[in-house]
Amino acid sequence: MTSSGRDGAGADWSWRSGRPELVALDIDGTLVDERGVMPEPVRASVRRVVDAGVPVVLATGRSWHGTQPIFEHLGLPPGLAVSSNGAVVVEHPPTVVRQEITFDPRAVIARVQELAPEALIAVEVVGRGYRLSGHFPPGELSGEMTVQSIAELAAHPVSRVIIRDPDRADEEFLDLAGQLGLHGVSYFIGWSAWLDIAPEGVDKAAGLTPVLAHHGIDPSQVLAIGDGRNDIEMLSWAGRGVAMGQAPDEVKAAADAVTAPFDEWGTAVELDRWFA
Image 1 (cartoon, rainbow, N blue to C red):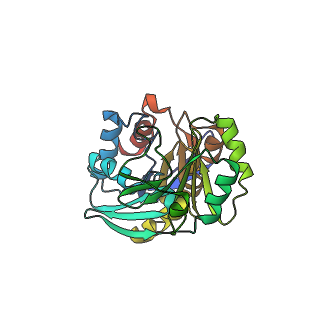
Image 2 (image 1 turned 90 degrees about the horizontal axis):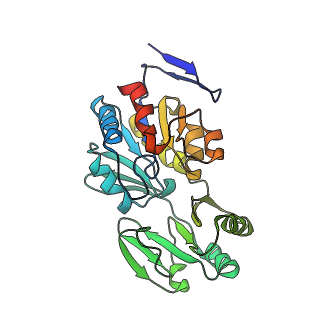
């Protein structure tokens, strides 16, 4: 049986088996709130997907260090997860890094120093934490934090560079991102004055591609849910991309459908459509 239809966004969708063959989920704003709390109805809905034997893959901008607690809280079976906006693919448990794509951060860091010398800079150390130019606001990063000089931060290839300026208005930060003139990298602007910079061509869709190859699943049979600008590529790529109700307009425009906002358990609403 094939399930198909047309949503308000005007995109066709269809499932060969009547439901998705793989579910890809963003974390922040999709599974947990700004305090990191996951509503029990959302967790229960994800568990129904797992119990149906359908792979659930976390696809997040978080580091693996910040992803692992969510993986374990959901009780996901051993499998793959996509972190660092697609630059890192991890198999867990036990934790094995299956893919880490890196780039030379020197040009990006030098340009940030030129345009916004007051901005905080962090580079990820996969599975451990971050090396950073100064401490970020409490709760924004997790794992080991090692403060280093700019020269030390730029000395080695990295999977991600984070630029953060808590004192700059969001609109000003958007302007800064445009002024950086980034070439040879991908970048994702967060909800606040936050910029994630990744290797060129790397995004959540790219990170999910080897996961699908592992499972032998076509992207047309994937259900993806997210709420951030770093979800746009994933939502456009998946057979059914669903934006959370609180997502920015450009994220909704990239999606096939829009579910309820997080505080109305929008993730559970969408998952229960297929796995109730």
